[in-house]
Length: 522
Image (cartoon, rainbow, N blue to C red; front, top):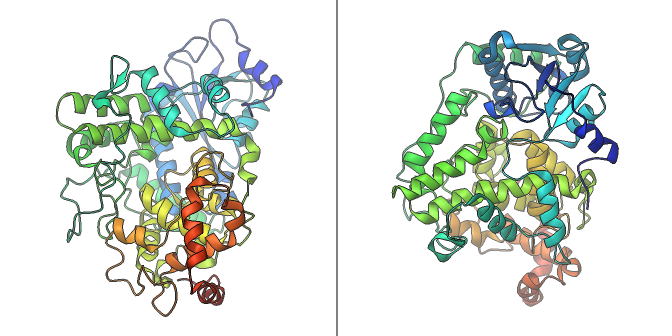
């Protein structure tokens, strides 16, 4: 078990000054909500000066999605404008340079950052006191206690953790039992899209209006690109996601009042002309710290108790926030920094250029082309395209899991290291060999055909393994099973697929066809 720092790090976190915890409080760019400034025991005072640093080095290190860079900088600058004279906002080359300008001396406090790299940075500065993490429901130490008690030989499983969180926070509970008598409504929430419907009959999501700060950020990004300082992928504008607390609250209200009722049944479905479906689009607001998960799950629970939302929809959303999101955060710290190098399947292939450049137009397979275009144009797509279209294709082709993780981190507006590392390494790419999930999440084209409208007009047929119309996912699925058959043989959930693999009469032909295709766009 990996903790969240050395003994020296933990001693540093325990160090406190009497009275005010420091001369200034440091806000990272994903700590933008009021709960990161609320006075707490030995935390920042109600009027403590605030330091914010816009580090250009962050954008230089990776080719982020242009819309993501715009959203993060817009959110930071909007927050600085709200704080007014209280904040010292510095635009610098690095965090070190920024601190030298904004707070050259004196003590600083900061809430526990959201990445191992950032934690190492703040722990390396002696005058910085690290306060407990905020923006999550369960303290890190409490999760470690739960995980140590419940991990066992089978590894950690999200469902048990979800039950524990529900009980602790009294979410959809009735005197110790789950409302409705069931802990989750997955069976009710896996309906395919309505037949012959291009879109769901649901109100559209909240969309913000851009302002002068958005314009300023876009001009800066244009200039930095022209000067060769930074390089981006994807398209930018207009901004689709909240950049302020006010916008995030408006988006939460719109979701719970107009969209949550229809969320449950089709949360796993996909429609080519409706990428948003009934999803909340609140993940970026949560991950920027504009919303607190407690208020999101409370809003969903209140909507159910008022009778405006069915229980499966409320439970499905609460499970995403209080179950899955919370679980990913804690596994990131519990598994430790070396988790990113897990590669149980020994996948080493590089990501092809057409994928890294989001070149959707080069792809013939309609599902992959559509989803890649959604990422290119918005920096977002919901969890099933991420897992069963993008991630599944990467897994089948044996792409290096660390490179796949980095791609998801860079290309999604809600992507952060803590989000993507367990999601991609543990679930999507099965690179940890089952520490987090009981089987690889990949499938032949039949799953995509059942859960979407992608396959009808596609040039490929989901039932074909070989020939001109062979589905890349169907052929890729059997190729993956053949390649990994020895490693997967111990999984009870893989016994039937592996038995079916032995019965395929055209497997050799399918494998030869896959080898000829190489890493060309499908």
